[in-house]
Amino acid sequence: MSRLVVVSNRVAPITEGEATAGGLAAGVMDALRHTGGLWFGWSGQTVPDVVPPESLPPGLPPAVARSGPVTLYTTDLTQRDYDDYYRGFANGTLWPILHHQTGLARFDWQEFEGYRRVNAHFARHLADLVAPDDVIWAHDFHLLCLAGALRDLGLQNRIGIFLHTPFAAPSVLMTVPVHAELVRALCQYDLIGFQTEGDRTAFADYACRELGGTALEGGAVSVEGRLVRTGVYPIGVDVDALRAEAVAGAGEPQLAALRSGLAGRALMMSVERLDYSKGLRQRFAAYERFLARHSEWHRRVEYLQIAPPSRTDVEAYQAIRRELEGEAGRINGRFADLDWMPLRYLNRSFPRRALMPLYAAARVGLVTPLRDGMNLVAKEYVAAQDPADPGALVLSQFAGAARELDAALLVNPHDEAGVAAALARALAMPLEERRERHAAMLRVMRHNSLERWRDRFVDDLRALSTGERGAA
Ligand code: G6P
Image (cartoon, rainbow, N blue to C red; front, side, top):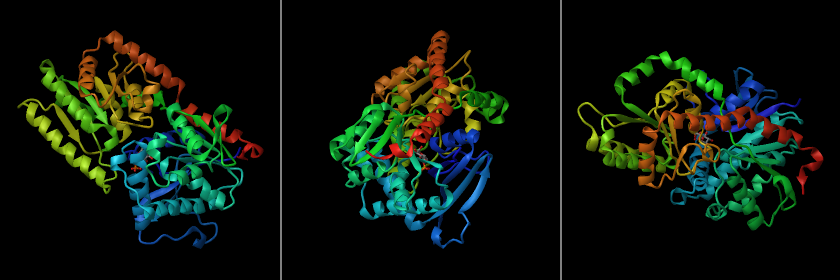
């Protein structure tokens, strides 16, 4: 069978036990661990000067590492590439737009040029690595222009992309001056995968209304003479492996330290990159309201917020960090006592292996993003629970995961009073109800497993025959 070639900006940490950088890298690594394959992406390093692939001696690929059956190839970026592509267009324009934060988005032509330049740089490296019958699976919003760049180099391979983030509503996408170029570039892929039907529909609506496309049966869209397939592939987790990690870590000193600090108090817990899309500010406010309204929980509950700093050289991330530091201090100042700290706010990351036993110990998992492609933390939290005595999940209705995990306590993260009431309800939820909700969520998660996500996408991509592709 032809090889699977995965491309993403961020590749999994190469050293075992390193903290994972976000949902994408962990999910892709888990998915590839079983099938094996080749994975290409950015090394995470910036260098003064990058040797263009065409100047490398023949047969010498970029840096290589092995992680089990996965061969990782990476390339460095120059500081200018990093500034224009990663810090600039990807994280300063696309990320806020896809998360409907138009106020935080900026646009700069030079950065967009840099974005295209790096997509072309990736394409030139890939062209040296792939065989004609390999299938190429690109991931996420960093690589919207990759398929076009590969086609420009004459590659006829089957090329698909999966978008881990949401897709923006057409009216929001159109605030980016290059919206049409971006969607045209996306249409150079043979298959585009989305997390939810809402995201897929937003893309198809844009393609039909703004580019005069036609939606065809089975999710295909014909746009300006090209036929592009679309599909919904909600990313999953490996439920049994995560539960096994939670159980295996039960004796770890870290968990013992947490328990001794808790001194029998109920634990509420959240973990995410420190990102404005995650709804941390609104969640802190909801927790404050909960504490103000529910004095019966004083000294009986603790909220542990783990938020490793992310994209720290993007201004909007510095601003949210400053704001949260102030809020965490203020909330503790208002409610803490000599023997009780209601909020523990940690700006550091933990390897996933270490988080699973902590999730299992948490009575409530709080996942309340303002908008999120899927949110794998919600699924990891559910997977980590002891089915005989599971914790309760409070989940934003705006996370992709809410489509599947409708047995969670669904909340609107903008409704402080509603979230505060959900916290009280989750903390007091009877065992029987917790079990029922947990079992229902686990059923969906077992069905929409990580394997199914991978296999459905790759099978759909492989199934496209040469004749069917491209021309509409
Ligand atoms: C999200 C994105 C990923 C990204 C991750 C971490 O999950 O969908 O593409 O890798 O955040 O962000 P970073 O900028 O550190 O790669």
